Image (cartoon, rainbow, N blue to C red; front, side, top):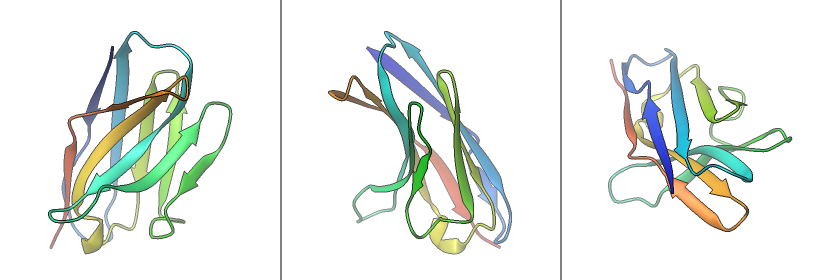
Length: 114
């Protein structure tokens, strides 16, 4: 089993920045990708950014140029700049193992409000 623990969410004003972190622990092997999704009430969970092992990040069009995903060993980060009201959501960490298994964190709330 793999456990994912997110941190870094909170309340920020429009135009501000936040950095999310997610640490993976447990039976970790053959990590194919790590990333971030987000969800708002009544909507489906959507991809924000994902980074594959040895590859570069892929981003949702809505966050390109504002968010940056990076990874260091078993930790994935999401640097979020120029935040907008519409970025408000619960952000979930994601890990794909050996192309077969998906794991999710508990989620961290990001609220963009003045």
